[in-house]
Length: 313
Image 1 (cartoon, one colour):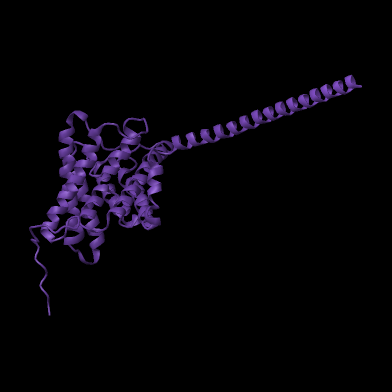
Image 2: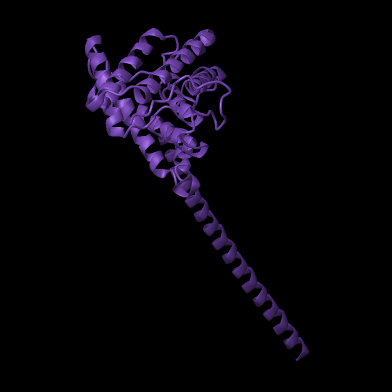
């Protein structure tokens, strides 16, 4: 009897052990298959993410993220700069490429019309980080709005060049070009961009704030702005010129290296960002001396040269 009980205990022990091992193996197999399934899903998501990142221009996500700064206070400003930049590029860069390729006279006229149309349909946005720097220096808006404006400009530029290049290829039109310079001539290029941007700022000040052309003020001042831009392009060709940091960098991302990445050379940023920004600040200071405006909230020790208008009875 004792032997029989001992044998039953051993049998039950072996049975429970077999059941335990079986359950453990099943659980391990389920864990393995579930783990593999999760890994497959994660790999698929990673692949989609990589394709999405490679499809969109670098920096675009940071630009879009900037649109909601300050709880979306400047979202409308961002959208207007984004769209205005795209309109500016297609209306002005198409001159001599899509239209007027065989005639510089036609290209000039189309460029002038493009400047007017881009400003009109874009709502008069700045579409230029150098202009934004000057307006911030003159106290037209605060730093946060200036930051969002530049982010919108960069976003519009990063989208525009690959988009309009694709359209050019589809329609078999001449693709757009863009500003660039010889790295060995970086000093000359920086001086050229500085001077051209400084003169552009003063053209903007005079045509927008100092002169008034009556009932046709808008069309006349925009046409004269287009003439000034074209003249500066012809007189200062060393670095393009760009006279617009956004244009230079967005074109470099897409059209210069072909790597679809931001320039790695410091000379690019010195020529196309530092020089124009310094020119914009200097132009703002000289205009502040003339008009009496503060610069970055600080009153200048000299000026104003401009005399206030006499009051009339």
